Image (cartoon, rainbow, N blue to C red):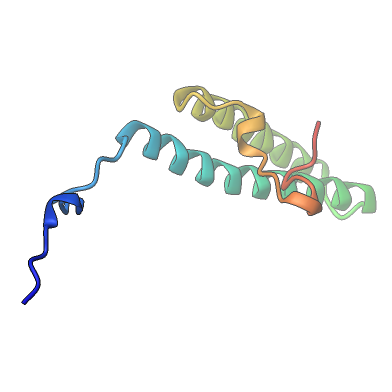
Length: 102
């Protein structure tokens, strides 16, 4: 029989050491990135529809107000989680960034 010395083996942990605040910030960043992408797509769609004359004056006014309110809420959420606009712009390597740079 062989005598195996287990003293060099790491002991299994009963739990993982996770930085809760860092994990929440990362998850919030991911969710806000998706929301920002959708917000920008909606804004482009609204501009396209305005240019084509598909919207009434009332619809344009409501859409503008809604998009401005959503943008303000995004600013508040970014501030709450300590994120800036660039934190939400994922680098996709050779494809560039996820969101267009302003």
